[in-house]
Amino acid sequence: MPTYQRDVYHRTLPLHLPPAATPTIEHTELSSRHRRLDLHHTWPTGPGRHTALTRLLDRITTDLGDAAGLPRGRQLHALRSFLTLRILGVIPPHLLNSSDLLLLVAKLAQAQHLTDPTPFTHTDPLSDLATVENP
Figure 1 (tube, rainbow, N blue to C red):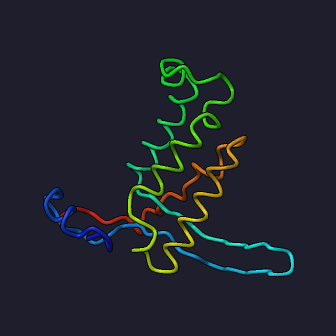
Figure 2 (figure 1 turned 90 degrees about the vertical axis):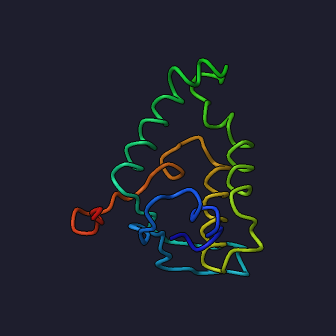
Figure 3 (figure 1 turned 135 degrees about the horizontal axis):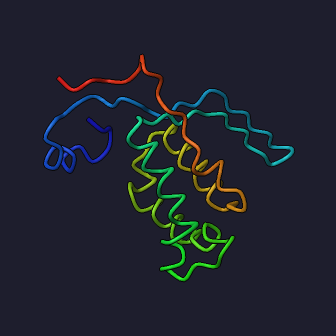
């Protein structure tokens, strides 16, 4: 069951399973002098979500991007504003705990530098041992 907006998930998900994958902050370092925040995190996904993200990225850079009129070679760059609003619109930032807010800031920063989509779209697939099987 998700941490935020439990009532929405309760109404829409038939099975209330614990999350199989959650993002984890491994290290943070703030340099006030250099005005820099270093954040090392993992963002694991299950095999289904990993496949869906990979397929969507492929389609945005081909037929979907063409259908939307996105400029070739700069499709994700053209989607920065949409992605920013989408990230901020899922759950209001003031409702997030500090760790989740840091992860949200990381995704926002990645969305602003989409010349290389890898950091934004890269996910760490769950290992076979970590997957949760449905009963």
